Image: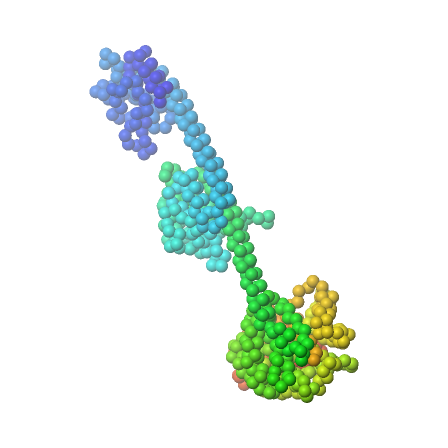
Length: 529
Length: 110
C-alpha cells in the first residue's frame, strides 16, 4: 500500500496530524495495519459503530475514527496532531474520500489479478486433462489424475469420482482424495440419502451445506459443504449419466460459486469421454479375445473329426461339417474295422453352440470306445447311450445317430438308426432308399435300437448321410431347401467322386440361401466303396 | 410366438402359436410345469398354429412328457402339420407320444 502511505505522509506534512488506516478480519478480532503516516502511530482502542467520524481515545489522546465508505471492515483514524492539538473534523472529511478511492482502486486491481490467476489455472487444467486423456488407457488412472488436478484448481482437499456400474445399478468410487478407493462403499442409484445418487438421478449439479444430506458412504471423502456434479456422456440422442464428481473441504472456506460449478461440469464432460473411451477399448479387447477363443474352439472341434483317408482304400469318403456358430453339435466318425469292414457314423446333438459341442465331444470319444466292442450296430449305439446317459438327461439333450457297418466280403450294410432322418443308399440307377430310423434319438428312449441289413453294391451304391441343417436351410423368403432337392442334386451327381458330390450340394445350399447364415449346423457325408 | 393355456374339463390345452424353438421352449416348459404343480394330470399340446419345431423344442416335449408321466399324468399332441408329422415319423418320436389328427379326437381319447 505504498500509494496510500505516501498520501498519509503528505497529509501529515500539510496538517501536522498523523493518520492511519486499519482493517479488521472477517468475524472481528485484531486490527491489521493497512498504511500509516508514522510507525509510532498505534491503532485506536475502540471502533465506532456508526460510519460518521467519532472521537475515540487512543495513544493517550483523542483520535477521530471513521469507516472508509465502500471498503468493508476498513477504518481511517486521525491523530494525534503536533502540539497535542485535537484533530479537526474537517481533516477527516478532507482525507476520507481520497483514502476510499485509493483503497477501492487497489482492491479492484487485486480482484482482477486473482480472477486472471483463476482463469489461467482453469485453462491450464483443461490442457492438462486433454494431455492426461491422450496418455492414459485405464479409467482408474485417468480418473485419479483428473481428480487431483481439479481439486488443486478449486482448492478442494477432499473429493471423489464415482462411476456407474449398470450390472448392479450402483456408483463405485474409482478415484478419491482423502479416502481409499478399495474400501470405499458403493452407492445404490436409488439411495435416498447420498448426494452422489441424487445428482446421478437428476443429472443436475448440486451444492450441499455442511450437515445437509450426510450419508455414511460419502463420509470418507466429504468434509462439510460438497459440490457434486454429474459426469455426462453426450450422444446424438441426448445425454447419458455415467457417474459423479464430488469436491469438498475448500482451503479458502469460500462457498462454491456458479463459476466453480460450470468449470467442474466442463471437466466432468471430459471425464465422461474418458470413461466411454475406456469402456470401448475394454469391450473391443474382450471381443477380440472372445473371437480368438472361438476360432481356437472351432479348430479344436474340427480336429476331433477323423480324416476321411483312414478308411481308404476300401472306402472313398468325402465329408464336410459347418457349425452354425464357431462350434456345433454335428459330427461324423469313421472306423477301419477288422475282417474287411468299414464303420461310418453321423450324429446330430440337439441344439447347437457350446452346449451341443460338449456333448458332441463326449459322443465322439464314446463312439471311438464302443464302435468295435459289439458286432451289432444297435448294441454299439446302446453302449454309447450308456456312456452319455447322465449328461443327456441332466442337459435335456439328445442325439440322433446313424451307425452303419459295411461288410465288404458279404456286400452288406448293417446299420442302426436312432432318430436320424436323413440316411440313404443312392444306387447307380433308380431312386434313393431311405435307411429309416428304428428308434427315437439317443436320450429319449431306454430301448436297445434294432439293427437292419441292406444289400450293398460296391462301386455302384453311395451311402449318403446328412443332418437336418441342410434340408431345413431356408432362403430369404423363408422357404426350406427340402430333402427332395438335396437328393435330386445327389442323384444328378451320383456318377462323380464323393468330393464333387459334397461340393455340389454345398453349392446348391449357397444358391438357395445366398448370404443368409444357417441357424443350424450343416453336415454331409458321402461314401463309396 | 406365444402359448395360450385353456382348460377343457380336466384337460389342460396348450396352443403353440408360431414356432417352438430354443428361444421360447423354456417358457412352454414353465407354463406346463406350473399347471402340473397345481395338480393337473392331463395335457394336450395343440400344434395347429405351429409352423416349426426345432430340435430343442422336441427335447422339451420329451422332457415334459417324462415329467408328466412321473406324476401319473399324460401328455398328448394334436394337429401336427405335414412337415411336423413327417419329422416325428422319420425320427421315431411318434413312438414316444400319443398323436391325434384333431383336437377333438385327442380330447376324447383321454
